[in-house]
Length: 122
Image (cartoon, rainbow, N blue to C red):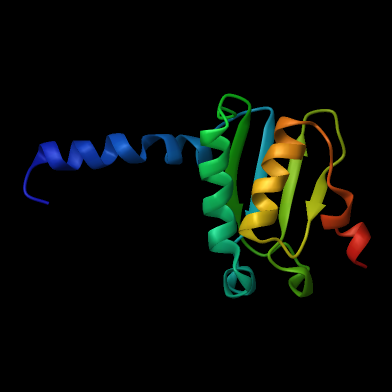
């Protein structure tokens, strides 16, 4: 980085991603990012959610964030979705491909993907 203008350009490029993670929207996607989650592949899952929510134009209604340990390490990577007035949905053993599907079908289409939930994996 050689100038303040370059720093401003980086800030502008990253603004959408930071806003997605800090939003106060009606739907929250929370990815478990404790050591066990990261080791199981949570980082690409988090990045996919951020990118897909942004690409699908859902940033006004969906906030993506991370948390520490969710407490079910054997099911990592774990993603919890909180929607106003609805029961929390816990997706387990997530991958980037599954994250894309969750954005399309659940966040955009309103349909929970039951086979990815903790209830289907116990």
